Image 1 (cartoon, helix red, strand yellow):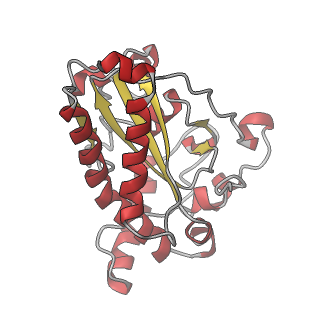
Image 2: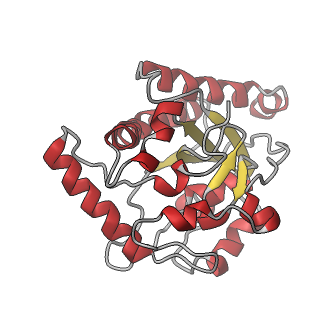
Length: 259
C-alpha cells in the first residue's frame, strides 16, 4: 500500500501540504511566503561525498536513521521586506532577525507534524534541528540543510555557499529523514549566480562587514563573531532573544528575492 501511495504521489503531496499548512499557521505573511519542498534518495552518493567536501564529522542520512530511504528538504522563503532590510543596516536587521528566530522555533513544529504523518503510516522519520547543528568550539556542523537542498534539486550553490532557489536565496532550509520511499525526480533549478556563471557581481563579498567572504574561502569564525555581536545588540534594542543573524550577503544578492 505504501508503494502504491508513493507511485500516485499521495505522500509527497501530503508532506508538501503539511509543511505549507504549518507555515500558514504562523499567520505571518509579512515574514514568510509559501514553502518549496523536494525529496532526495538517502543513498544518493552525494551524501557520502559531503564527508570529503565538508568533513568526516558530517553525517549521512543513515547515521541519523538506519533505515532511511528518503530525505525531505524544504525552504521557507522570506518576504520582499524581510529580504531588503539587512543590506540597509549597519548591524543586525530586526526584521530579518525576527523572521529567522520565529521560523527556527517553528521548524520543530513542522518537522514533528511531518514525522507524525509518516510514522502513522508505519514509516520511521526524524527531523533535524534547523540551526546550531555545529560544535561552537570549531563550528563543524553535523548536517548541512543547504547541501541536502541542493541534492534534492531546490537550487544550486552560488558564491559564498548561498543557494538560489526558484524563489530566491532569502529564507531558511530544514530537513526530515524518513524510511518512506518518496519521488526524487525534480529537475534541478538553474544556477543563477552571476559570479559562478561569468565571474561578475561579487556583491556578497563586498558587503560583508567583517570581510569574511572571498571567492576562495569563508572565515566562519569572523562570520560567527559578527552574528553573535548582532544577537547581543538585538537583545538590547528589541524583544528578540535568539537572532544571531546578519543576512547582508543574501540581502545584496540580485536573486535574493524572486517572485
